Image (cartoon, rainbow over all chains, first blue to last red; front, side, top):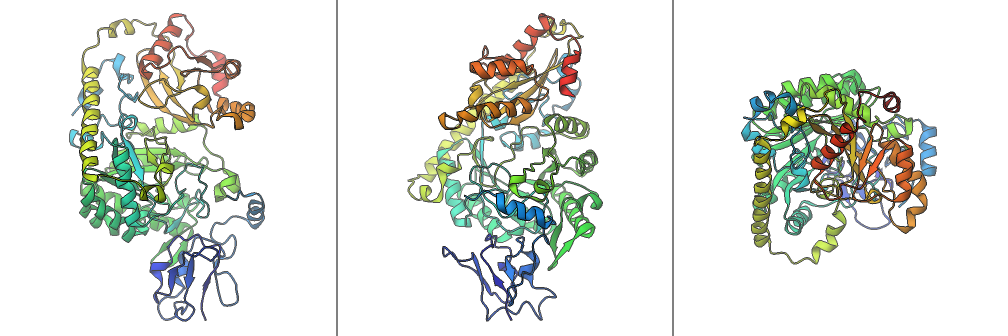
Amino acid sequence: MALEIVDSCVGCFACEPLCPNKAISAVMRPGEPLFFIHPERCTECLGDHDLPQCAEICPIEGAIVDEFGEPLNPPGSLTGIPLHLLDQFRVTECRQ
Amino acid sequence: MELPVISNAPPALAGGCSESGCGTAPDALAHLPDHIRAKVQDHPCYSEEAHHHFARMHVAVAPACNIQCNYCNRKYDCSNESRPGVVSELMTPNQAVRKTLAVAAAIPQMTVLGIAGPGDPLANPERTFETFRQLSEQAPDIKLCVSTNGLALPDCVEELARHNIDHVTITINCVDPGIGAKIYPWIFWQNRRIRGVEAARILIEQQQKGLEMLTARGILVKVNSVMIPGINDKHLEEVSRIVKAKGAFLHNVMPLIAEAGHGTYYGLMGQREPTPLELEALQDACAGDMSMMRHCRQCRADAVGMLGEDRGAEFTLDKIETMEIDYAAAMVERAKVHREIADNLEMKRALQRAPKFDAPARRADPPASRSLRIAVASKGGGLVNEHFGHAHEFLVYEVGPSGHRFLGHRKCTPYCMGDTSCGDGETVLGQIIASLEGVEVLLASKIGFEPWADLERAGIRPSGEHAMEPIEDAIRAVYDELAAAGKLDPAPAEVAARAA
């Protein structure tokens, strides 16, 4: 049982100091997600908090997933942006 | 204190003409007690006069945030955008200190270092305070300031005071949780994400408490508010009254930025931005209760240089690595430059206080002459010194028979960015003209033939006659000339129609 950070992470550091198990670290390797949750240390905050702290503060929808790959914050759940508008934006957004 | 002098000034001066280096009139800070004015008069973000002469920088050491705002998208960083929250290079405190010292050596006009994001500085207390701690030791002449959403503020007041931070900006968009719920979808509070009205209630409570705690300790507080049409635009007058009553010394009402391309909630939902005239009207309405700031440029969280310019690209981490800097010599040089600028400004202030022999003649102007908005292209220094085609913004002044005041700046894409983008000139010109809503005269150091004709067609008189003149002198000369020619009879129908 462990959470995972995927490549949509923007590297904002918000989760890192909150982890009760110090399981989160910055990666700094090109091509990998910016942060990493050590799977053996992650307890999903059981025993420490009601809810996993990293997912509670994470501002990016879909960036933290559970062991089944399900996002803890699914699309639209944090910004309130309707899904069809999110889809449209993804198509048109400018990539650098 | 200058307050009695200003408020008792004869009508000819009460309109605000100050012929100061800056054009704010009356200076938004004039009512402040001397000891506060002395603290802010060389701060480019607080004093409109100072922003022409002194520089500032922000260091992006604070990526984490504890709330979400509907005008912010945490995902993107575009290097060619200038707006709050956008940043190119996140830094550690050590890197930030190196960068600050390098910039302060290269730009001796620098007086202020701020931490403003890209998240919330007080949601990153260790990184923020470590940066402040090192800088207060290594560059004690640089003023430190911080900008926050206020949620963590009450817990940080003690530490802010310890680091000798005497300026704090709080973004307060509302004092009503019902309105707040439409601006903030969630906050992170006591180990959980809280949403809706409850989230807004907690945030507002913390902001107000933080404001009271800061002012009780004598720390200067500026309040920023984002004007969101249909959401908080009517409400901000009340916000202004309340924050003033609690001791904030300056209120900065900024327009919402909500382009669909930024991917923010407001941008994608089609929430509109306020027009320049709506913003002016709200700033005027709030000004009855509070000093208003009108020269804010809504900088990036890593901006470097004078307000409105961004020299960040000259000071990237790899460039700083190669710079050879004598820090002690740089501090001596800064002290010299700051003193020269301060002396110069003091002289201008003294001149301004001196009796003006031409004042009676001005009062003899036909009293019926209406006021007029004039846009100016300027590179800085208080001069009409920018080509129309190169201007990234126009400074807009309202000029009346006996005074003038600075209303704000209108940002734009420059008409001619060079050969590559000149093909877009036509549409860009249309946007510039639209952004000049309400303006009747435009002064630049030079204006090309084509835009000249289009401006005239749009009812804006272009002029290159006042190139390199001080802005106050130029706008006064234009006004007086038009008034003398009888072209400023009260409220002509076409202008009213265009402003509507």
